[in-house]
Image (cartoon, rainbow, N blue to C red; front, side, top):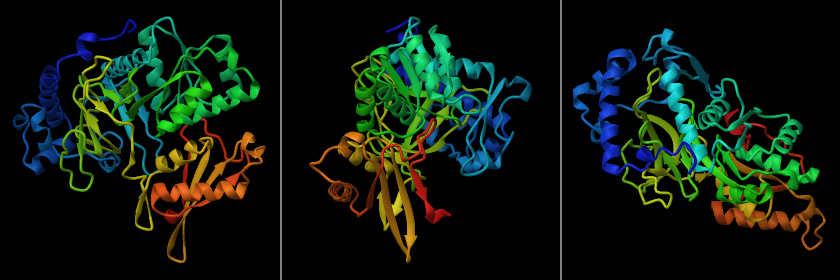
Length: 432
């Protein structure tokens, strides 16, 4: 499985995994209590002392950490190491509030590189591959994470960053890229561009590692068909380290969490109660051996489920399902919970491309839901079904999926702006 498959770690018996996690957790709790005033105050308020945490079975005793806490402690409040020990920062976009800054020691960078190398190996990568990194670089973690993992693996690494599609395709063809790393929406755009130029026969891609935004199983199948590769999901977030916290293997049936570095929980987003395995709820992560920015019980707001069902790849790390949405991007429309992934599933199942926009507004004190979706050139030339008939069918299918009616507007091909990073799918005018 490549030259970076850490079999002794990734296939440990579950009992050994939990024992290792417990030992690391005990040290980390004492570390943050002694070195981070925020944790010391929160734990004291909760009546929890470091000696009360003797294993992961005691994790639930610790208080949660939220993004609001990180913003309140900006910029240095969560640091557990002197600034002189830190070698890098990354940051969130700050589009919904003050930026969150994550700090890294060299140990933290090495740990992160290891995690991303594992993800590449799980996708069939080795030192013989050409890995094209088309995630953004800079403060965003996507490019840096997969770049470090590719170097760790020994692959030829193309640090392309996002954008400049002509150059992306030139290098992809000329250097024979075999693994593509980018957002799913940009992968779909690259596939569209390759098809337009008639150069699919020059593409040698065998795998793609796509993350940083939610995407449906239907979108995966579409990308796989159009790019002629196997598409793998990857998960991470700046606050925890970046991509590589979990990754898909060849089974493509959930992402293995790197449990020697992170502990995952699922909680009820309303009550905070830890839910049993297999339950859908909010994902919570604890960093058990990071040095500079070790978050414990961080609420991600992502919704998924965890399972320890045996995986055909042989890895024993717990698996998290594909993200089902976020507690903070779920749309409540006329009292109904609506997730963008549900709308995407309907559109792709009807043969439409993954280029759409969801617009929510409030008219006369009532919520409205409009969906703009591009038609393909092939559909335009199909005389068996007109635009109005197509819109009526989508309205019916969306109502069956969502339970409420949406207004559907089929628009011209390429009339919705393409994304070279995270796609902007939702415009909620009720918040403006």
